[in-house]
Length: 515
Ligand code: KIV
Ligand code: ZN
View (tube, rainbow, N blue to C red):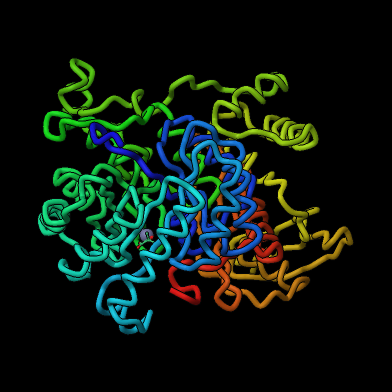
């Protein structure tokens, strides 16, 4: 057990997926896992195997194909969860079971309805059962941020004695403040008699915007694993962002005196992959991966950076993967150049048919748009998920929009292969198109988010549209891209309907029965 570096545990595919609408399909998860492996992430939390057959299959396929990173499945402290996680991880080169139970008074009393001693008993039994399956077991004290320190000491000591080699201290509700959280970590490591037998880990949520600060404070107090997600994806305000953690530790090595194994060149490509797969756009001023993170507007800054980069930049854009190997494809690019670039960006094709379809879409796009950038490619393949049959497909769309007149949309969509025509008016061309779809489908969904992003610069840029639909609490994000934003919006709406039909929405581990 090496304590001379910080282990990066990525939970984009598990905790990140708990963001409303961020459900990913098996092949999307596999692409992201491959990208994380290339980035040299130490541990990939691939999912919560017991949640559904789809989750089980995702964890299994990642365990079977990722070789350089440890693959982990979450499980509650229940026999059936642990056995299912072990089953999914059977093919892993290096597999880890991550089991958890809540330890705060409020969770034990109101959620678990258990006495503290019973909680310790269940935690110990879970760790022992997991150890019968795998050598690498992590134990988490859910809501540790609001737990009593004496109780944490007792349960952690017992979990280490039972065989846990990683102890995770989550700030589940994002309640902690850096100095205080660092002190909690230090107190645990100092007071628990067998703490030297485990790696202490930190897992922070961002409700007060402090997830990264709290995680870094815990590292300064001796934590040697950080749990985080790409782009800080995660439910509510998200989790600690991987790119910020990694680059803070690296940039301020003078303070941390330690590093991670991460190959930072893969940060930006992976960020773009996650954002295009989930439909969660990255805000332009987001540290490290935002479009403006290295852009210098003011004349004084530009002048300084041109004379000597370090005057205003503490990191280099190239080091985190901005524009590395950037290759612009176009109309004349061949199938091989297309496939190679996509593989470099983390997308792989399971079948020739998938590749051919994506290449045909690429040619269509190249007809409309001169230069095809990496951002376009990410979108192109995320539209082509290959995991389930689309029930709804756009056949044609005509919109009439004129000042002083009510916009009208006329569209044809194929529903399970049969074409239907819908006509509707709306307050704008997008609204009219959505109403025209609903005149055919009658889905009963509520539109809870609509956003448009221009993904590259220029007027021939593609518009990337995210549409979030809520059907009785089932939430999905649909994505669509096109040089025409009304077409992009229509595609996004149909994509969301297809996701609802494919039932990719899954159970939440922390609210599922039994925790
Ligand atoms: O936030 C949390 O407590 C979690 C645990 C399951 C580790 O995600
Ligand atoms: Zn969490």
